[in-house]
Amino acid sequence: MKQFITLILWLAALTAGAQTFTIDTIPDAVFQRMQGKSYKNNCTVPRSDLRYLRLSHYDFKGQVQVGEMVCNKLIANDLKQIFMELYKQKYPIERMQLIDNYDADDERSMQANNTSCFNFRAIAGSTKLSKHSQGLAIDINPLYNPCVKRGKDGTLVVQPSTARRYADRTKSSPYYIKKGDPVHRLFLAHGFTWGGAWRSLKDYQHFER
Image (cartoon, rainbow, N blue to C red; front, side):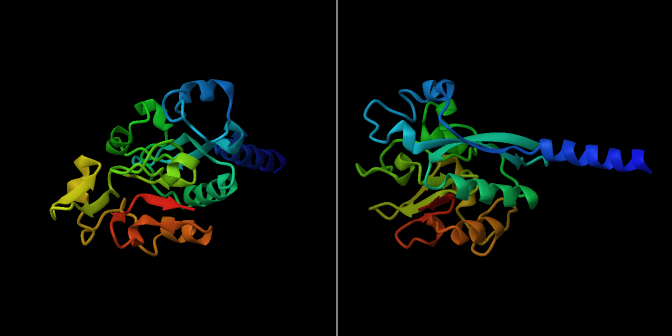
């Protein structure tokens, strides 16, 4: 009986150890990776305002992965709590890598369906800085949850460009973010707003604070 209890405790500890949810200041090696990419030469956000997160998540194959993310320190604890809950619910997130792996190219990252946060850049088609520039916005499964808007000539603009088939939200998909689903509820409960509720455009992947 004693050996059986010991085995149960060992398995519980092993399972707990497989889960990673950490918040750190930006390590030197990570900051070096960011240079000239997400952290550009004209970046006005102090390194001390940013945090490096490592977060366990389930990928689309149901396998556990440990992702990484840079965000503003103001939302670091919120993101940790949100992703801990999404992990418990086995919510699928295909990949979570620093956007620097894609040379901070938002289109490339979105096409790869990469979930990311900090990237010092302007809003697409604008000179205004995005909330991503402060690390206060996050994009979740962006290929399946594109940004959809009408151009000045009335044409439909979809970002990423490869996500046009996912712009029709009347269809069903386990990867769509919709009002009332786990991602939507959790982010709103932590004080975020959802781009999918905007009027001028629909940015289904996007949550910001």
